[in-house]
Length: 103
Length: 409
Image: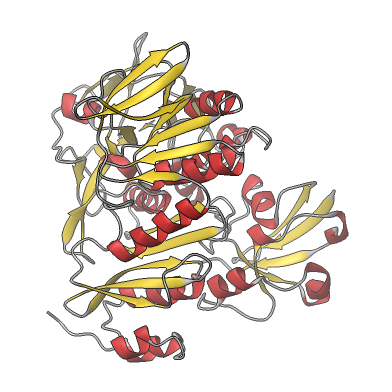
């Protein structure tokens, strides 16, 4: 079980508890604005772009090659960018905060 | 009232409520489940060893929380446009605004014996479940049709160890959607993974004897034997209801830029509709998640009286073995195809389609960078430098500079 805090594009905080899936599925299941997961989580649409809170970047880890390529030209991309669908929920992420970039 | 329960239907519920639309929403769907992701049905969902639960687009409780009335496993039989009601058999339901999201139906090629119990097609979760239950006992599977569904099924079934024969009527695979070079690549890919692939084969008859199926072509000569057959012979728009209601239909329900049909109280979205696309200056009927989702957003805006969203780029993907194909745009009508990289298994490459110098589509094979650069260029109606395009040592980002210049035709 991990508690994840999403900060939506309009500044709302949504706290979600999840024990599996990814940062994308946990958000979609809890109606977090700005995360769509259109492709269902196969790194094909970039509609689950988040910025990982600075304190968590090393624990969450960097984007993979395909993911980085998908992110490269997205609006608001930076070194904290990840696609939510590529970050599995795991107990070590309990307490994580991410900012939803949205489109 | 939304008729249909696919990606478009789910998105319309989401978008209407996100826009704080206060009205009543009813979703009528002939399937027993709330909307689920359909693409996995021809991929991971066929593996008997994998989790068989459906990947719901939104959780079941979303619909109650958002005050969406669900009428699952109910079929709309007809629409009375004058009274603004739909007939669901037992009762008639009234609407102010009706949205048709009826999707597409599998084509059934004229094959004698196509109705035999060992012949499967794939569209719904129930279809996938039925096929999944049978593949465990099947040694040899024949797939009729080498479009995306046929090839994805072939890939999924090779992964679980079935012997797979793919039979395609055209002289190459994916002939409806891609260029000969990309077709050749996918043919090699499947053969390398042990698929027996034959093109230019038109199956005319299927015979069954003691559970064993025999596939015959033209003059009834033997093509192959199989324990089960999967049909992947393309789809047609499910516009029957619209036809019955005298809405304008021509390869899908005709809709305007707001996805409205010729009846201002009725909209249509997704696979079942056909819309003029300014980017391509032609009417298109697209079968894709992206199209379903984006058209739902257009209708939500129209219903709420908000400005319509800007035109979006059609995109598609297909996963086969360890290969991800990403398609940006629609390549139909291209007059030039430029390959970037080498089109052979194990490598990543992209095929760039142009019409009179303007980029209209890209097939990116294990090359998401080509896909994202192309997505930007196509929407700008860019005319990219062919020199940079074909030269792998040049950074694709240069294209965004060279391709920014556009000309009015």
